[in-house]
Image (cartoon, rainbow, N blue to C red; front, side, top):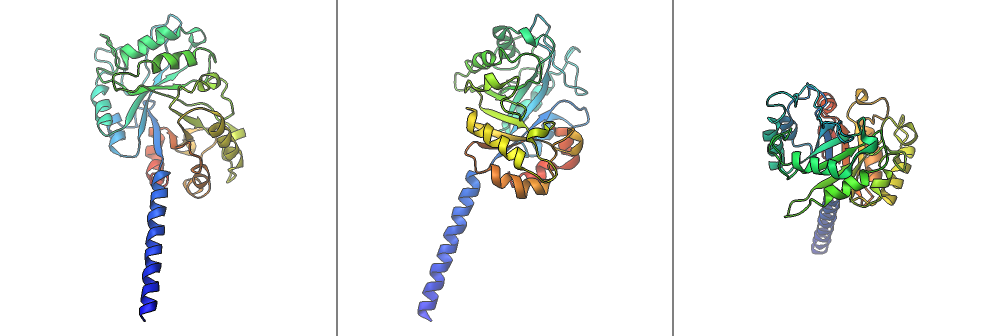
Length: 300
């Protein structure tokens, strides 16, 4: 009986060690969830989005008008109108509330008319003074200091973006980091951001694996997406790569991945990459409808 008891004790210790190691491995692979807020007045407030505890990165979308001698203008759909008296400055308290929870809040740039000939120095100075740590009498979102800039460039030129990233990155000083992230399309390399991403200046890239049939999930088949994922994680000098997905079938024309397929088929494969950062969802509004982030949070 004594020898059986000793063997049992050793087995229990071995089992306990395996469980501990598995937990540590799972923890080391833990990813984050990023999302976009600002393009639907029915998605609730920014503070409410952050209160869910589901997101680690929040992009305020979008700043579509800037550069080319245009007057910069932010567009937040039904949430607020910057040109009104107080405009969108009331968002400042929401931004600070999110940041107090450890959530990084960034402004997302879209390439608007005139972006073919932007002056990178002019745009960087404007972004620094009006959204980041600089000073301006007309900060559209109030005094809150955003954590960085997201490049969601889907048109215009493939020039200047690397210069803009370099100038923005130079503002990281005094213990405060300016995050530079990008949302390229999954065909590799991205037509607009490919050159900029080669600079090594970008912290994260959330690749849009939707509305791009050659490199997205399709009817249970993950092979095209998996191949594109390997290209991105092997060839782009960013810290972390995120899997960009629509949060519902209505959020994109194609590329939606059912939750069970994501959890059972895709995440176990892509999480093996040391550059795996998590999942980006378009967008907060659609995530409310499906509770996609809540369903995948513990698996990401």
